[in-house]
Length: 108
Image (cartoon, rainbow, N blue to C red; front, side, top):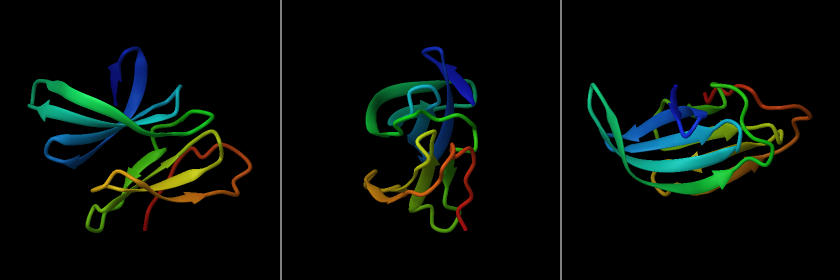
């Protein structure tokens, strides 16, 4: 977890220069192009790819699929889970039915 613009983020690295970041308070999911080194992360560009209506509330609310790394998921205060394509950055599925916040995820 790092701090940027005063918001704690959950971060996934989906390629050597591509990060997915979730802002807890706003619920925004960002694609970030970055230069990574051991000492520093330099953000070159960013783009909002989606948003949870009621924000994100825990560090387990953004998770990368471990097999093939072609999908990642986000869960938020709106009780929804979004499944994303890691290559196209498009939302593939929206899972509904939770009555409370989604605070952690595990993709099997």
